[in-house]
Length: 327
Image (cartoon, rainbow, N blue to C red):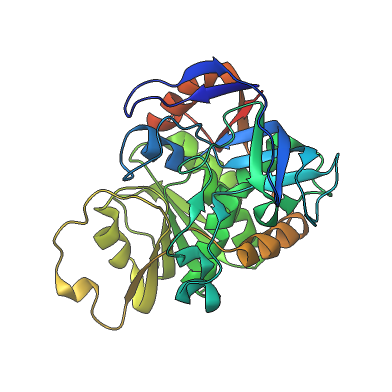
């Protein structure tokens, strides 16, 4: 197999040729068709997340074909198309797992962070944390759904049912969730980097009723907002846009420091919450909903060997939608 490997934090990924991995009991091996590039991959490569397992193969928005199965009843057959997300395994016995909050598991395994991920030609995964993609015919289009879509969906659920919703950082997650919001009958207000007219046009093309820089105020108070950009100063900015009783959701796994802010931004029962990881229930719900909502992803394809270029394009804001590696 081929893999793009992170051997040292802050260094470029290196192409390696390895023996094909073998699945153990309860595992499947997947021949990867596509793996989207997530901002979390940047956080891993750039050392912004603590204690990654190095060397590591990044990547956790994986779509591929099951080509070998381990022992046990796995629920996936040879030749089936599956998706593999960030959450790679949970212990099943801690208080969080027992209460249905496996996204907060005390002993989790994360794809592309604590076990090898999808910047490769093959990957081994826990079969119970891989999802059937029988109705998804285009693996490149489906790949961003496995994290940008899933974490976006969890963020949207936590944001509540408000009609007017702000999306800060109009990248991979926001461009998917904007479509879900419009399907639900919500009004989307898109916030981009200051002066990023391409992203604003992209947002309007997907049904946003307003698009502007994150330094701007929308024309009306918002019911809720989701921050996908890893920029701490957006927290007080978003709180300033929501109505009394409104909610702001931080949808990323990492964010720069939140600056000091006046209490009045939080007062009047505004709420600030964060999203951590995802659950398998999130995946089942979203993968059922996405086709019904008519979600169409915007993607730019790269060869596996171009993983460093894809990461840098994401880092520098040169993408619309999502980058996807194709082995």
